[in-house]
Length: 508
Image 1: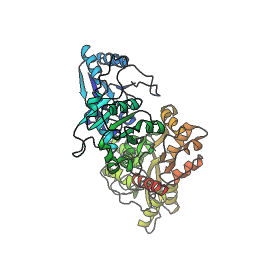
Image 2: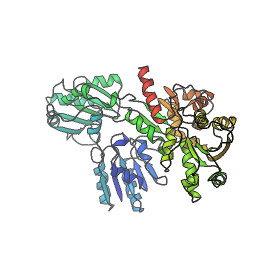
Image 3: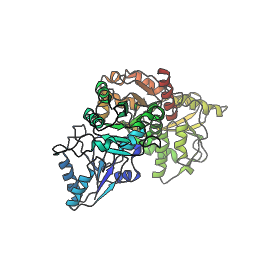
Image 4: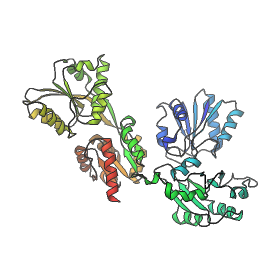
């Protein structure tokens, strides 16, 4: 079976539910070059990915349309579920009709999953309604250039000149010719025109003009494909209806060096603020001292007065150990639970527990101080501290300095992702394509720096902004030779996103 799936125009949030469902169970995905990388993350790890772009890419060599069609048949005849992931909508200037016909000819069953077309989405993200009761009641979609070798043009420029709103695909290189033909057919030279490049993404750029001058403006500004052209009086509404480009972090690409599950909160916040999150896992979490954790858990109830969690990962790994041992949270009865901050408290709630203590100052020192404040005499208080192997010492040291009996157990360890798997990220860091870098732990700083090599600090500092979630991570960046521009007042994704907004507002 082959599924011809529309990926939408760029913003991964515009992917349909049906399309996302099929990606998650595909055996083979043959995808266009303009498909957003976040959509490729939906593909199961063991599935085959084939780049089917028309240009050379780090993802692979270009394929001709004939090669793509042959691949679809070959993979489907091998008994595999194939998704052909195409930008926009498969049946709107996407050659989906040709591919469907080829499949039918070869006896391959297929399904077409429509996508959000660039015509509507890109115009909307630029603040241009294609129809408007007072300005436009007809819309036409047309190609700005026709297939090579076609004996004669089938574009009715006279008919298109009479349409209220005209959307041209693949027209940047032929814009002067298209404009001249429309004016020759009677369209006013003063008709408003918008050219929108990389619409619905952080790289969106909109240039406006008239039929008479738009080609010269595009040439002067050096605007290149991919871009969509919208022609008509509705373009005049853009100044009042622009919304996407007015978001406070619009146009910024932000590195979030975490696994997808951990990155979700910040990624959503960034997207809603107009930025494009670049989610790249740079470290992986592996098992730590499971035997040691089991030994300490067997001491409950009564073995400890407190269990202190300094990270959400520590919570999740501890609960994972409980599950492996056939236990549950009832084993912690009798001990109070303290967490370093609200994100860790939220992780705890997912496992059916509420923290007894969340400090106002959300770091190791603040947590130690808050636990001490609960006790008049802290001597002999027993604290279990599940944490990362080689984790920060300030919490344990502070507690022990005031007389507590602290038992630390390395429930997990963090290792860097191999540099070969970070090739794409490293290229973007070298070329300064990512404007904002965020780091949530010293281990992330170390992993990226190790992959970048001896000039890591210099390369990282090419970014416009480098943000650290807290002082310890900031110190790790400085130790690697990178500057630190921003540390939020609380170690949370919400605080980080808010701090970025404030930072850029003050800089503007």
